[in-house]
Amino acid sequence: MENQLKKLLQQAVAEIKQSRVARELEAVEKKYLGRNGELTKLLKGLKDLSEEAKPVVGQLANEVKEEVARAVEEVKANFQPVEQLGFFDPTQPGIKPSVGHLHPNTIIQYQLEDLFQQFGFMVLDGPQLESDYYNFSALNIPDSHPARETQDTFWLKNGFLLRTQTSNTQVRALEKYGAPLRIIVPGRVFRAESTDVSHDHTFYQLEGLMVDKDISIGHLVGTMKALLSAIFKKEVKIRLRPGFFPFVEPGFELDINCLICNGDGCSVCKQSGWVELMPCGMVHPRVLEAGGVDPNEYSGFAFGLGLTRLVMMKYLIDDIRLLQSGDLRFLQQF
Ligand code: DAH
Image 1 (cartoon, helix red, strand yellow):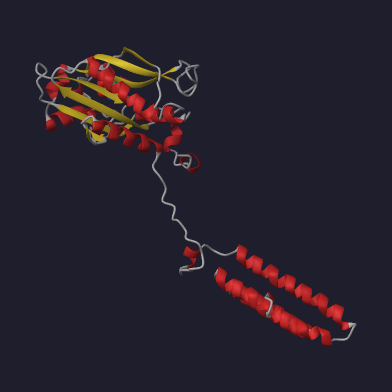
Image 2 (image 1 turned 30 degrees about the vertical axis):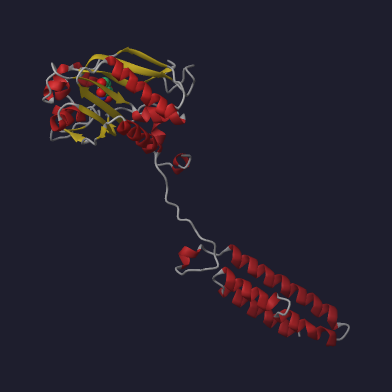
């Protein structure tokens, strides 16, 4: 009987190891350890043994039972997910494929696109590889203008550049569609800058341009406020101060109270408590002219929202470099 028990153990373990799906394993377990299983059948012969042999064989039977149970557990723990096995196991629960999700930048971009489309704005996508003309000259920034130096530029050998601002699409759109015009241009821009918590060589802006008859600063401020309340869904403290950009006159800087430190001062707001979020202004007549629009007939406003900054404020991200790091520990939080 001892031999029979040992043989049973060998057979059971071999079959257990061959099991590839849960249902198969359960069947093997039942075959050997079940109420009418092989082990129970064998143990019926126990009563015919001598008194001395009974405890010895009983003990062995127990060990065999434990070992079979352990083998079942081991195999169960090592089961591979069904999709790796290359066949369909109907006994397994359904597996939902992981499809990823939107980047925080894209989430905010889509929200803004929805909002501006309600206001009748078109969403445009300008070129990232740009000529000097559309990135600078057409925007009233002629050669050797000091404003060029505020935007450290990646120049290409062929004279083209990586756009430093989504403003590059203003004159392109005016040329193509004329006035009246309402557009936003979300997109990637590049600066040859050293990086820190609030600077990256690649980031996102969202340009806005509205040209029509009798457009005033009132339209500009109203639009900015609508934008901010749509994103933050609460009152955010803002301040408007004069700002210089050659393509607007007058030009403004719209700052929001830093939401990371609540205005106390931190590395993101450079200890000032305020974050420059949205430079803006009334479109300079020369820009309208460059786009073939008569500045005596039309006026307009433009803004260059720092989309990446807005995302940082919205989600309280204290290092801009995280956004492009591709670090899943960061991205999975959104
Ligand atoms: N393009 C500017 C920059 O990147 C920001 C800007 C300022 C855009 C004023 C505008 C504007 O449309 O009106 O620094």
